[in-house]
Every structure is written in C-alpha cells, then in structure tokens.
Length: 201
Image (cartoon, rainbow, N blue to C red; front, top):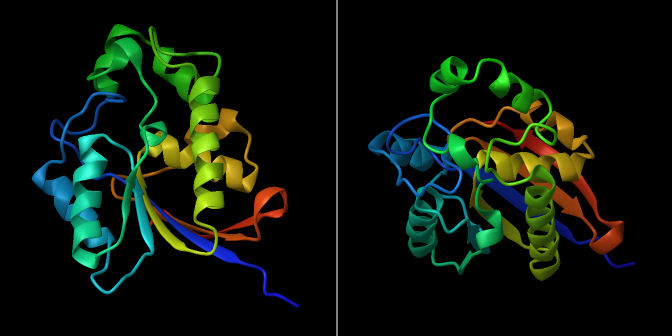
C-alpha cells in the first residue's frame, strides 16, 4: 500500500515593520531593523524547504527573497496572501482608534465579519481569497516542505480553516511578529487531514 503523502507547511508572520505596531493592511512598510532580527532569529540556518511562497508586500517579500537565495529554493509570490485591507484604519495605532472611535475596535476583534473598518475589505472576501490560494498551494506542492511568509490575518485564516475554528474567532488566535506555526497535511484534496504541529514559536 502506498504511503499517505505528507505536506509540511511553516507559516511565518513578518517581523516588526518600520513605524511599529499599527494597522497597516495594504500599506507597504518595510521591516525595521528589529523586524529583520526577529525574522532571522525565527529561521534556523540549517533548516531547508523545497519551496518558499510570500505575500508581495515588502515586510514579507524582502525577507523571503533573502532566505530563498541563501538556501537555493524557488520563490513564489502570490498577491492573494497579502494582508486584509483596513480602509480608514490603515496606518493608525490601537491607541489612536481607542481614542477616536471608542468601542469600535473591540467590536471588530470580537466579530470582524459584522464590524468591517470603514472602507476596509470585507472579511468574507478576505477569507475566500486566502483559502483559495491556500488550497491551490497544497495541491501544487503536495508532499513538499513549504515556508509561507505572510501576515497575521492570513495566517489566522489558514489556521482557522485547517483546524475548523469558526472564523468569528479569528482574533482569539495570537500571532506575534515573526511568529511561526507548523501544519502537517496528510493526504490531498477533499481527503486531506491537517494537523497543527506547533504554534506561536
């Protein structure tokens, strides 16, 4: 009997961008020096992947390009893995929002589908584009070891999908700067069985 194929995926969130912690969604800030250090510390020099996939935003793509070149593996860029758009909240800090829109941020974190930031991307649209990209990635690279460099929101959607967590609980999952999670997916297609190996290291 043939062995069930196993695909191993490391989800790596970008490190701290220039300007620190704020809602930046589509805003294309590069990594700060601290952010580069965080990401390099999250990836061990002896680790190997068969392929790397990245969001096109600088805070992900520049680091992914560095690692892909260093270890000599193909690098794919997929715009569907970029962060959710926060509309009028782009570039603002949590403290600024608490002052200017009291209670609005709490509603968003508790039920993001019903409390989209003004002008922001609808959660259902975000989930659909990330999920489609994720399933295509699994089909394209079945049996490989993959590093996906993306964003807090993207990685939360993938984890919720893989573990069948209701998406209204998206923000109950903490994903730190340069936080890393590993999924093992047994089998492929509709019969695939994802397992969480570790989260948040």
